[in-house]
Image 1: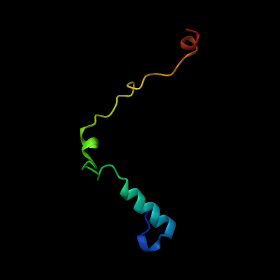
Image 2: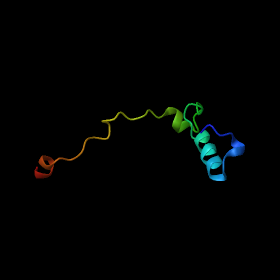
Image 3: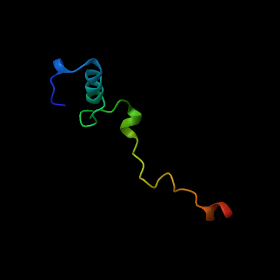
Image 4: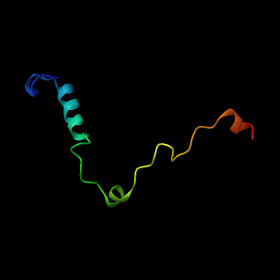
Length: 57
């Protein structure tokens, strides 16, 4: 998007504003104490998928 904000239509401006709002690199301050003290889960922390062998047990 090389267009300036004046050349964008309303929908493009709304998208640009939303993209700026959710930019994780700018959001360095946690929103709450819970967010600050909660550790992100590992990829395998929730367990794997059930297989056909698991269903037969």
